[in-house]
Image: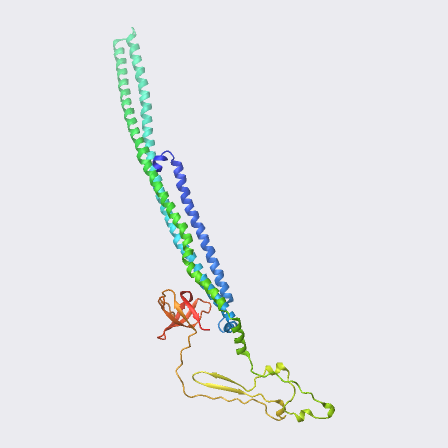
Length: 426
């Protein structure tokens, strides 16, 4: 079934229907555009959120990352940063593949519809012009035929008039003959115009308008198909990034499972334990026996509280090393009972320097990564990689979405964190 056959007399309906279809496309474009704006705002808020809670380089929070629960939170921020990038990609692809594409297509449809309706209008105007000619010819034929009848009646009346001369009779007959001849010409012209109009009307209703209506039908069906594809893209655009979003979510889950509460306790112990023995019992000083406990037991001295003892470092050596120099600090804790009043209680400090210099070595890797995608590494400071390539991780993502890696040939550079699976050494 087609519009040209079934809707031959519904020009206004077809006009309104096709306009309604174009309005729907425009409405859908606005809908998707607002969706992309929501997506962009959402991504922007997530960026600000991760930036707000990401520790600054060298801050206390960054130093706390030696604990697995602190590092897990940092990993979640990194995964959220990658997740945010995918939300931005959704907005970008929707804008390009749906909004811009459908807007361009909509303009083409408007021009095509305008052209078809213009053709229909021209055909209708031509038919109306022909009909006016037919109507004028008909009216002229009607008018001239009445005049011919009057002239014939006048000639007959003159012929029967006994007072009329022969010249009057002849003149009346000639007038009637002339009018009859004019009426016949008008009749023939009317018949010709009628034939022309019927032919043009047949052309209009059976050829011209059906062709225009069928073209409008084809245009509308193409519009519907294109719009349906836009509906599909609305879902596919998000579906295409779901694997990466899924990996981001899996990464968040993995950070939670990698938290080791027992290991965090051990790290705290190893970092802050002093190694001192707990203080013994304080001896009883019996002043009632007149014994000078202070002179007889000079090794005890003034009793110290447990917090004071834990805050001291007994015979502990601190070392600061680099490849060019070495400095050692040695501190001895002396018992107050063994130092006289005039004894200098300053600590012995010595430094030792090595004159031999060694070439600075590369920092040890802190993990490994496997490339998920190809990366050209064309920007300054970046390094290229191929899908499946294994690289050493030198510096983890600090919240900006980039990780520093190294090849076996010592080439170093940054790669997008979301382009690789990263495993850090525990």
